[in-house]
Amino acid sequence: MPKSFNLPFNLHNLVKDPRVGMRAIIGVLLAANLVMAVVAFRPFGGSAEDLARERAAKETQLAALNAHIRNSKQMVDKVQVARKAVDEFLGKYFMDRQTTTSDLWGELERIGDLSGVSLEQETFQLDEIEGSDSMKMMVMQLGCEGAYPNLVKFVNLVDKSPRFLLIENIHLNAVQNGQKLNVTFKIDTFAIDRSGADS
Image (cartoon, rainbow, N blue to C red):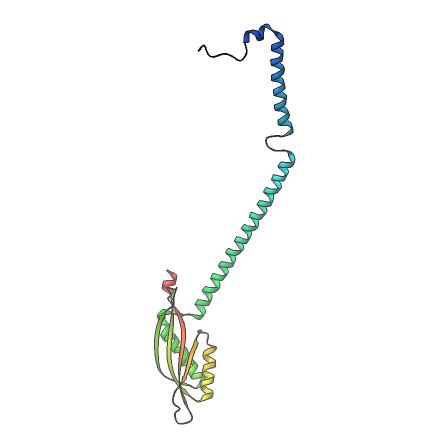
C-alpha cells in the first residue's frame, strides 16, 4: 500500500474506544432507517394512487386501440363490399373486349328493330382510358334513318339499354323525301379485357 494512502478513521481506535464504535453503528442504523422510510413512503414502483392512475391511463389507451381496430375491420369490410359491387357492375354493364364490336352492333340492331329505325354506316374506334390497363372506350359513329318519332324512340331505348351506352352527340343530316330523317349518332361504350383483368 502506498504511504500516501490513509484510512479516514483508524480501525484500531474503533475497537479500543466503544463510543466510536457505537457512533458508527448508530450512524449505519440511522442510514438504514432513512432508506426504509423512503421505500415505505415513496415506493419505487409508485404509490397506490400512482399505480391506479397509470392503470386507468393504460385502460383508456387499450379502449382507444380496440376502437381503432374495430374501425379498421369495418373499413376492410366496406372495401370488400365496394370491390364486389365494382366487379358486379363491370360484369353487368361493360362488354368483353373480345366481343365488344359484335355485342354493340347486336344491341343497336335490336334497338333499331324495336324503334323502327334502319341502321346504315358505322365506324368503330377503340380509345385508351388513362390509368387503366384492362378498360378501353369504344367510340362508334352510327348513321340511322327514320321518322322523327322512331328516332326519338331509338334515343330513348339507347338510353335505357343494359349495355351502358352513352350518346355523346347527335348530328342531323340532310332530310330525305320529307318523311325520314338521316341522323348520325356518336355513341360511347366501355369494354374490359377480362383475360387481362383476371391476370
